[in-house]
Image 1 (cartoon, rainbow, N blue to C red):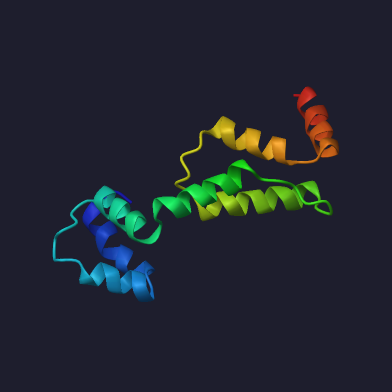
Image 2: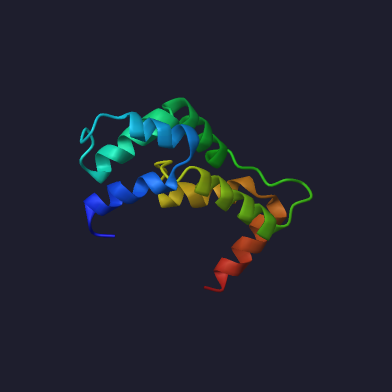
Length: 116
């Protein structure tokens, strides 16, 4: 979407309850860009402590004992989806997942990548 005014206008339709009330309580035209809105929204509803907690969950991911590789991968993607602004670089995300799976799964991943 290219039109920033349209983005700002449509954003309110995505919100519910407290988030919608917060947006409508802001003074008129106090937020004029998408970046300003993003910063204000994240500051209000995702404080740094929550972001740090979610980032730690990603970085310290561990596969469960009875979890298959695809289940672990889906759970890991869910963590990433919950915190899209985690700030982790791609290699750190890959490393977190790889380090968090069991040794047998790592061996499977290693064998699959040797063929590439």
